[in-house]
Length: 132
Image 1 (cartoon, rainbow, N blue to C red):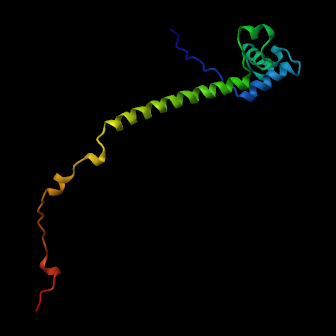
Image 2: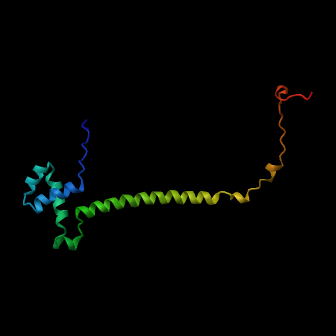
Image 3: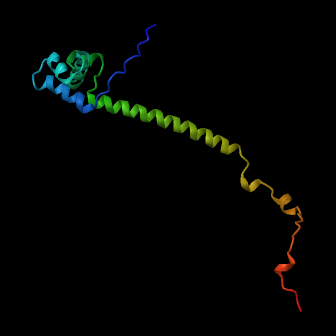
């Protein structure tokens, strides 16, 4: 096993990906030129360019391809959906626990009010004036 730590893959913003794809799609750069000028890998640039171009006639029959904006929106919505699912599970557990608790109105407080407790009180004589 090597002692090298695994490098983290860089994360790029949507705008960066779209700008890199525009170099190839609109400005006429080759994939290699655009990748070198942007400091990114050829494979990443190729994915971004294909995503921005949209589906071709052959690929539409197989599957639909999302552009970069749609991919980002899909990722955001999936994360939000997971979060909402977790929140829903928490609420379901809370409701089931609340249904098992005896309602406040059904609790009989009478025995508590019937208890008689004697308290001893110490009074300092100095604090009260004596009648003359």
